[in-house]
Image 1: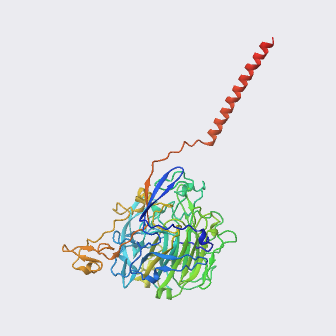
Image 2 (image 1 turned 135 degrees about the horizontal axis):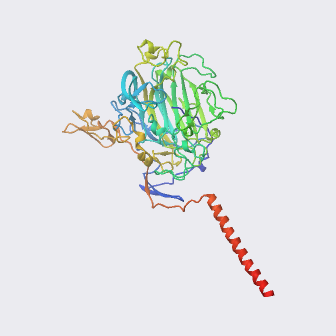
Length: 599
């Protein structure tokens, strides 16, 4: 989880694409290319009125917002919200239209936790992501021996994902949250972030050769490591030819708590929030050394840092090398990141974290990401800042993730303390506690409390979209064709997501079904949801895309065969040779005829 910064520079309103007024309920848009044709059927009410994902509990005064980014004078309306007002909501697979709380091991980033859906729920008007000491036994796979083995983890937490449910391309995301644990006790890794829909968080099979690509140029040297490359004439599964795709990452915040001693090569101390953009391909040569500032001319430049809150370049994470066998498939990612100073109040009460994201255009030009905390600008990146690698501000459909993780690489002692093996990290076991951060075991249980999530987009601006599979960046057919990548291989699931259950749970009275406003308990003692509510207990508001992009394939258009240049050149030479030989033959015959007649 790492994100990237952004900054200003945006075309004037007159230069932006604007939706034409549309009074009709249904309209059809044709996209016809040279090689293939697709009809995209868009079912919608007025495009400026998008309420399918808006929580009815969101007060009217919060249904619009004013952008904080300089030079953005557009009007913004809400397109998604969750106020978490209804107590007792559960987010297990098939229970909620907005979120899925996953049930699986997290084997990324040296994770020490196991994710369980039961560790996320709503109470007192808050989403609570609870982290606790609890042993989970599971089957693990050894990549070296290619065998399964029994393993256990001692900590249990939760992750909520909007994957393949609600996605946006651009807009404003605002989240009010109280951070978990204590500000000066390290080891917890709370995060609010976005990820491209072509990858599913913690499902590594889906992120290989996808994460965190944000690149739409043809580079033959990395073509094999970017699965959906701009070099590809045929990308298949509904994807567009010659369009580079991937799953970039924007981290709204990733928080590191801990004791506030001085840190090397930065003015920031713990606790701090990392705000980052992760993209690929990354810089291959002369990379900065972790823990040191980059040498002049060796890293991205021009990013904007806020002044009201103490913010500085993040010298502790510049990206990762994603190693694959054979080596030609290995590639580099970059994390363009800043750290902002936090204090105890961020762990004691609610604070507001916000990004304003303008996607790059279809040519990968422009765009920005800007980060704000409690309305104060902290960090920004615009498209020009990415010239070092020709990557771009994401224009992929991206979804939200909310989670608390734990990792031996996140605020744990480095290097390992003398006399400690650092092979186990279990509270209560003396041989394991030596590798834990000070005060770590006093952090449990804890709760990451989120008051609301609200998303806004510019009115009638076609560069900002709602949907996980859009006309310019489809994902639906690709995911359907590769669904095993998005399923936990150790589960018995046949589909990545279960269908949302609408009622049907056992009940004794209407209160068991959310109350008479949400649902009723039928005579057969099962819940029946009223209109607008869903889930087995009718506790969740319904949610849906107001604009859908349904692909209807037209007759396939076959190109003439592609003849390599070398063969075409040989063919031209042969034709010229034949013509020259024919001309010589004709001249010789004419000369013989001339000689004969002269005698």
